[in-house]
Amino acid sequence: MMRVVGRMPRVVGLIVFLFLGTVNVLNAAGTFNTDSLLHVLDEIVAGRTTIEDDKRRSITMSRHKLSMADGDKAVFSALGEMFRQYRRYRLDSALYYARQRVVVAKRMGDSDSLSLATMNEADGLKGLGRFVDGLAVLHSLPIDEVCDINYYYYLLHSITLSIYKEQSDADEAEYYEALLHSYRDAMSKIDNKDMAGKVVNQSELLKEQGKYDEALKVMTDFMRANWSAVEHNATFWCTLSGLYKIKGNTEAEMYYLAMAAIIDKRNCVKTYTSLQDLALLLNEEGDSERAYRYITCAMKDIMSGNARSRLIQVSQCMPIILDAYTQMQERERRQSILFDVVVSVLLLCLALIMVKLRRRNRKLSAMQLSLDAKNKELTVLNENLSVANSRLGESNRIKETYIAYLFKICTEYIDEMDKFRISLARKLKGGQISDIKTILARPVADEALKDFLRRFDKIFLELFPTFVEDFNRLLQPGAEIVPKEAGTLNTELRIYALVRLGINDSTKIASFLHYSPQTVYNYRNKVRNRAAVSKEMFVEAVQNL
Image 1 (cartoon, helix red, strand yellow):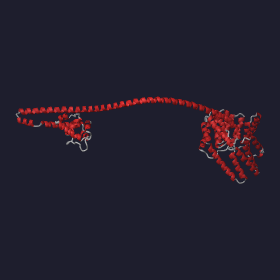
Image 2: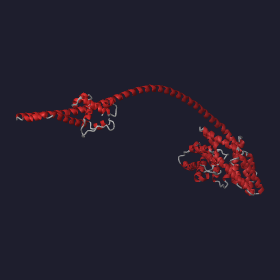
Image 3: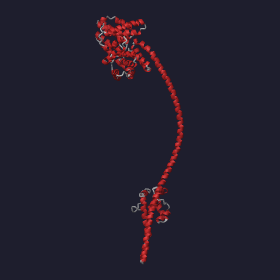
Image 4: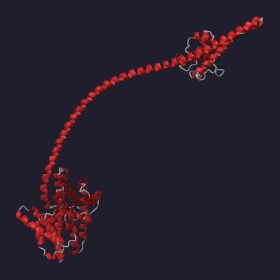
C-alpha cells in the first residue's frame, strides 16, 4: 500500500492522532472511538475534490518528467512512475503505461526490466477485471527470471483471490481455493522485506485453518511492535477488520474498516473495498444515510477509475443500501408530514389562545385605565390631605407658640399692673400727689404697643425665620422690603405676616396693629402693585410661604 503523498490538510492531524491512539485503545478495555473516526471520514469524503486536485498536480509533474526523459532507461523509469500514479487511480491508464514499459524494456533488452514491466501489465489487467488475462501474462514469465518475487506472488495471490470470489461453481471454487493456499504458503517462505504483508499473509493462512484467535494475536502483536509499518497500510487494517468480523466484534470491525477507508481516500485510491464494506456494515447497523453517502462515493470512484474488478461488488451492494436509504427517507417524509400536522394544530391552538388573550388583555387594559384614573384621584386627594395636614400641623404649632407667648405676656402685664397699683398706693399713702399726676400723664399705651409689636416680630420670625427672604422673592426686582433692624419687621411686613398666619381681613389686621382699616388697605395695595405674581395669586402665595 502506498504511503500518503501530497499536501497534508488539517484533517490529517486528527487522523494521525486517532491512529496513534489505537495502540492505547487496544491495551485498554477494548472500546473504540468509532464515531470520531467516522466524522473524520465524513470530512474526507466531503472534501475529496481537494485530494483529487492534489493527485492531478502530482500526475502532471510525473508526466512532465516523462516528457523530459532522455534515453530508454530514463523513459522506462518515468513510465514506471506514471504506472504507479495510475495503478490505483485510473486503471486503463495504468495498463497503458505498463504496456509502454514492456515495449521500452524489449527495446532495452533487459530481462529484469521486462519482467517488472510484464508484472505491471498483469497488475493493470487485474485492476480492469481481466483476471484470466492477468494470470496468463504472469504465467508467461519463467519463475527463475522474475526480478521481484514478492510482487510476483502478490499478483498471483490477489488475481486468484479475485477469481475465487467470483466463482459460483463449487468445483472451480475449490480449485482456486487450493491454488490460493499454495500461493500463500509460497509467500510465507519468501524473504519478504514487506513485514506487514508477510504478517497479513500469515494471518490468512491461520484463518484458513480456523485459528482465528491466533491470527488476531499475530496481527495485534505486530501492530503494537511495528506501528510505523502498518500506520498507513489499508490492507493490514482491512485484514484485521475481517478477523474481528469473524469474531463477531462489530464495533472493532467498523473501526478498522474506517481506518482503511481513510487511508485509501487520502491516497486517492479508486480500487478499494474498505468504503463499500463499511457502507454495508453501517447499513446493517441502521445508519442508512451515511451508508448511502459512502456507497455513492465508492461507485463514483470506481466509475472514474474504471475499476471494473470492483464494479460488480458495488453494484450488488448499491440496491440494498439504496432501498434502506429510500425507506429511511420515506420514514423521514412521513415523520415530517406528521410533524407539520402537529405543528399546524399547535399553531391553530396558539392562535385561538392568542385571540382569547387579546380579548382578556383588552378588558384588563380597560380595568387598568379605570384603576389608573382612580389612583390619580386618590393621589390628588392624598396630596390635598397631606397639604391640609401640613397646614393643620403648622397652624397647631403657631397656636401653641402664640398661646404660650400670650400667657407669658398676660402674666407679665398682670405683674406690671400689680406693681403699678402698689406703686400708686404707696405714693397716695405718702401724699405724693404730684408724682402720681406725673406717672398718669406718661403715654403708657404707646410704649406697651411698641413692646407688643417687638415681641410679635420676635415670635413670628422664630416661627418663620426665612419669611423676609421668601416674601421678597414674590416682589419684582428692586421692590424688596428690607427692615431697618435685623430680627424686626416693618408695618408692611407685619401686615403680610398676619396674612401668613391666616388673618386676611383688613379690619382685624387694623385692630391688631392699632391702625385704621384704610391705612392697612393702602399698605396692602401698595405692596400688591409691586408683586411679581398676579394680584389675585399674591395672597395665596404669601399664605404658602
